Length: 240
Length: 240
View 1 (tube, chains in turn purple, cyan):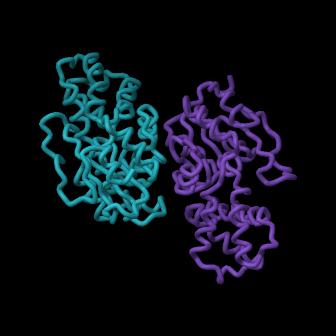
View 2 (cartoon, rainbow over the protein chains, first blue to last red):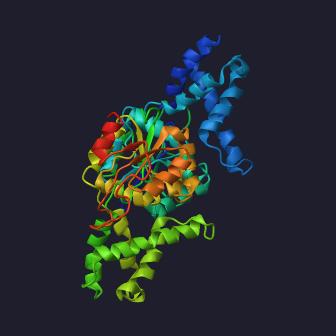
């Protein structure tokens, strides 16, 4: 069976486990209203913030910048983003910008997540393998009840996905062989990078991660070790 | 109140949370019997293994050796230890030495721990701040039901206690001020080092950590922020 020998199931988080767009939009709405941009679309604000995510990490992945945790990148990106919405970041207090940045710590899981993770935890080590930093993942888990066994990911290994180090150092920390670790993600690119490192792969589509009309990652683009519609079916495929 | 403002409670683990001596002795007993040392005291074997712990870490703390996880140090120390018990390590299979090293992953918590941690977890972030590596802490937690919110400690920050970096980098990862983090330990020296870094301190004596006749760490040697006889009373002092 495709998953035989797996001992740890690690998860992409933004999009796969939690609805980042809905959560950020929820908190952005009142912020935009307070700052004279009540007509702006909060979902579009979340999208614009997220578009700056990968380029900011690329500075680190390329070696041009030392490892910098995602909270810092999110905060910088927020300041750069505000003028697009006709808000002068210099006229917003640092405390308010800090607080809005913490919206990323307060994202809600998709409805199938908690039950699926609880089932997987009975037999496997479960942990995030996210580009989010430790306190971000920790605050999120505590608020939402995500029952992680440990917080793994970019800050622990000082490398951002999809660089091979992000996956291989995580495998090393777990003292496992790559094929004993399965990455679950809603993103074909993340899974492809993990597979190149020898990890097992599980795809769970999240067709509204980017809102209605999403065109990417609607389907498995390779023959992943497991494909499941949601985390309950995923747990079933893992035999729990 | 001495603990006002604390948001995270982090724990020394070996001795404070789990009974390393009893757990290692339990697994050493059958090993010793198999290798012709049935007359040796398994508790003494555990003590002798543990005596090599700090000197091995000191190689890392001093900078003479790059950061090396505790599982590796435990394994090396085991090989060096065996001749003291008239066992030739060259005549024991690598698999058996690996397996005995994993005894450190299978230690039992003191009887008051699980209830106390569950209470503390309702209001605080709880995590190990141990010199044990991540998979060691993770296996231990999974087996014993320790409900950590995250696995922090030496491997995450690449520094062994009691160097200041071990405490200060953990505080930094938590994005807190030092006084928002309280270290709980059964060891006055660990607490003294944490206090020098600005952390709050909680002492829980474990008077049989080293077996009957223990002479060290029986009492608080400074006026720690909280002193409690066991984790239930500790949780009470934290208001949960």
